[in-house]
Amino acid sequence: MTARKADRILIVDDEELVAKVLEIHLEESGYQADWASSGEDCLNRIAAQPYSLVLLDIWMPRMSGVEVLEQIRKSHQDVSVIMMSGHGSESMAVTCMKTGAVDYVTKPFDLTDVLQRVEQALMNRTTLLEKQRLEREKDDFVSMLSHDMKNPLTAVIGSIDIMREGRLGPVNVEQVEYLQSAIDSCNEVVSMIDNLLDIYRFEAGHMTLAIQPCDPENILASLVTRFSLLAGREGLRLSADLDRNLPEISVDRSAFLRTMGNLLGNALKFSPEGGEITLSCHPLARETAMEMAIPAYAASQSEQMFSEHARFVLLSVRDTGNGIPLEDQERIFERFVQSQRGNKNYGGAGLGLAYCKLTVESFGGAIWVVSSPGQGSEFFILLPAVEEGVSDGE
Ligand SMILES: Nc1ncnc2c1ncn2[C@@H]1O[C@H](COP(=O)(O)OP(=O)(O)O)[C@@H](O)[C@H]1O
Ligand SMILES: [Mg+2]
Image (cartoon, rainbow, N blue to C red):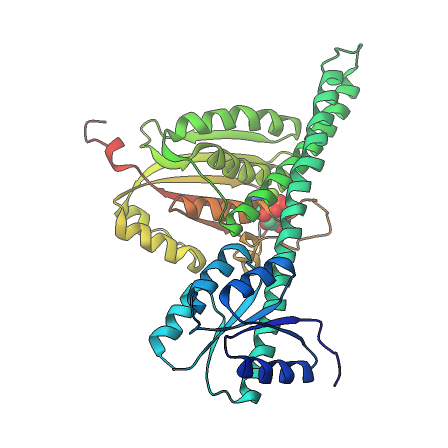
């Protein structure tokens, strides 16, 4: 006998003989096994010390195995339970699995079969616990990112800003420029952290969006003001081509702002001095929208939209930058993917467009890029228009 397994197993059966036979076989296989003669005894024992697995008889006096299973599931989440029954019944097996058992064996047992099932259940449990541990680590990392990195960075930005404004003493033009560029870099890190946090929230299903009808012009106007300043500092020109009669769109205002901010930020980052960036927004009827050359990776989203809506809003951010090779155009919407062009290191983490895609699709829209190297890029976002906001009289 080799004590190769640290797992402790509890056999719960009112028939002592059955329990003892099992106990001997489990111990011979290297497990530590104990016996509980009733449901109450079982619950007391697992409250007193940790067990990896419970082999639980269904038919017992006073408290049935299913009742015990319910109690276990309420308070001891990481114990695996295999049910044992004298009469095989499919519906009972289903009930047990639904209540949270991992397996079901019928008496009289084939002992080799029981041991195999025990081993499998314990392996699955180890895998699950490891997965849960990694999830917890990821949670800790994400909260570390938001609190321990983002908060101090925000404080750094605030302090530099006070200096930049000359409130701590006179600063010359060159110093203002350096301080501003320090602020810009900090802001870029903050937005990288924000993108990462939100991508994580989307993937964990924790993302909460307040989607409601919004006037796109109103949101875009504030972006134009902010990014015109940034563009000016980089020697670029930003112009806006916003239609006067835009229908409302259903979006989460701040997520939409960050999405458009990511696209504008990219256009600034990837355009050489002297470049032009155009932000445009137009209403679009289904017939016109359907004529657009939408790449395959965005087509399923857009086809669904065309089947459900008649009016759309098309947003675009166009630049005169370096462009993106065709083979990278789909991949850049994945997280951590950056296109390999030239030798210049632009920084960034490759998260912005992944965030944009998750957000736009959660608004029921589609996002894609049209670009060729040397010719600049144009990122498109197509969103359904809010029907009631559109009247013929507009
Ligand atoms: N306007 C653009 N012009 C050229 N390349 C772009 C543009 N926008 C995005 N890209 C390419 O897509 C990649 C991914 O963009 P993004 O997800 O925003 O990450 P990041 O900006 O951190 O690199 C960029 O690294 C770049 O290679
Ligand atoms: Mg980016």
